[in-house]
Amino acid sequence: MIESKQNQQIRNIIKLKKQAKERRKQKVFLVEGLRMFREAPKDRVMKAYATQVFYEKYNMLFQDIDYELVSDKVFKEISDTVTPQGVLAIIRQREWTIEELLQKDNVPCLLILENLQDPGNLGTIIRTGEGAGITGVIMSRDTVDIYNPKVIRSTMGSIYRVPFVYVDDLPSVMTRLETYQIHSYAARLDGDNIYHCNLKKSCAFLIGNEGNGLTDEISCMANRYIKIPMCGEVESLNAAIAATVLMYETMRQRL
Image 1 (cartoon, rainbow, N blue to C red):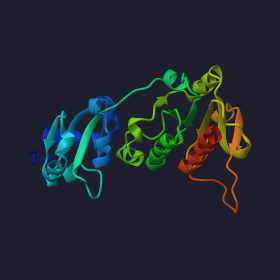
Image 2 (spheres, helix red, strand yellow; image 1 turned 120 degrees about the vertical axis):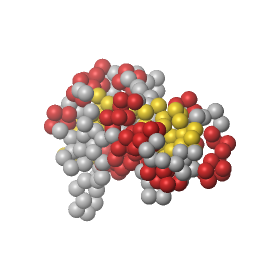
Image 3 (cartoon, rainbow, N blue to C red; image 1 turned 90 degrees about the vertical axis):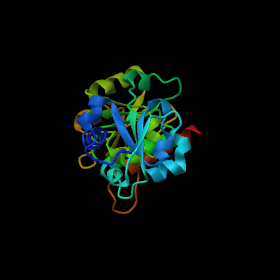
């Protein structure tokens, strides 16, 4: 059992928890809690760490997995939650290409995120996106790190299943959408009512930064501006909520 936070493995986990640069370098990320551990693809689990109590209760989950037991005190150091459940794992990152997201055999429904910054928003979008049947998420490089522990928790396991990619040049992606006949919609206050749009064909929704929205450069490249109609004096919705409405309207039309 590991009982010191000075242990090299523990020190590495703490670095992975805090530093996106280190996660990128090692091409791994951390997941924590029973659900995230249980749903993790076995072939991507590099190593798991658990308290004695958790292991005794769920030892069947550790079959064919490299693992270490750690003391409760040490686990609190590596945990990113207020009330740790007692299990954490290092998971290999999976990489998709932009071609894989665009060249779907079925009718694509993509989300394109520009400079989204809130971890909770991104995690919720990934989770809701799986539920709504989207085919992928494309993000500008300045979007929050998808492997941020807060994002991971918010995905509730969808991080393992929803294809995504970061791109350095979002305008070039917008140009490529035309090549694949994917109709793009920019969410803006001056757009057309989303409920009047035909979303049964291949489409991509553009969602911008929480505070500033989409940049003019990206907005101007969209095929159409859209908005979600609202009552009262509300002007806009939270980015994750807006994305959810758009995704589920697409799902509704395609059912």
